[in-house]
Image 1 (spheres, one colour):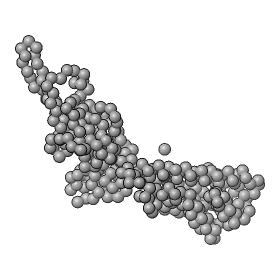
Image 2 (tube, helix red, strand yellow):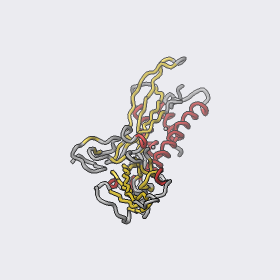
Image 3 (cartoon, helix red, strand yellow):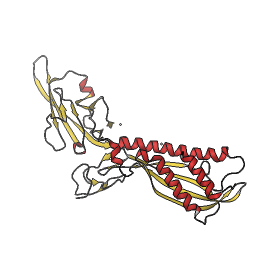
Image 4 (cartoon, helix red, strand yellow):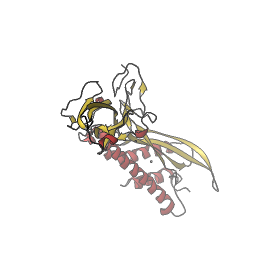
Length: 326
């Protein structure tokens, strides 16, 4: 039975008849250094970094004699190529399957010669380029929703029964998406309606969350499971919106002059997206203005132990992505 039909039947049974960068996020293009100015770069977790050039754009347009390149990683040791780090002969750096621990300051020193044509005198020139690279994840989405239903009275068991039935219907509507309704609540108020006097209404609030029991089974061993859970929660949001649109249609089109005393209040549905970050990640619009919507890896001196949206201070933390203050 379709969900809106089921709720309609319940409402009739209950009441009868009434009345949403110098910094660069990941990209395929080449990213050049800027002398004297660190370049911020954001790389999505488990994705490949953009290609970093050990050179600035102005230098790249000129002839460079006998260039050599030295890359230093966040551990202050020279970088060498391996199965995740690729350094070309022309000094370009790219990292595969970027992890939290890869975050930090990457420094490249370009050395080259200038040669005076008339004397063949050589001069060695060195230029340093700094790149601050941060791992990031997409935030986990959930949705805070609110609706209103009319009721005969603020007293009696029918209000609680409606509340429980509505939650069950919504859970069933989105269960195949590994989503569920959490933190449901309601309060009854009397509302002055123009041309209708005082009416009793139930103000119902709940959150739709993509982490129902067994949600990891939907990840299919994907390293970026937030892409899957966010896709699922968007579908869940759309289904619930359509459900309440159907309620409005039923009570304001299908019935002639009489409607149940308990019914959905048209245009009362509200939805707000709520973001959260996985442990070890957080948002900081001031520090990461060019990735303000991202959950960026917590820097040394900070940590995030749960699904909060910010990293907390902790002077004893010396790594990126800390989940505890130890």
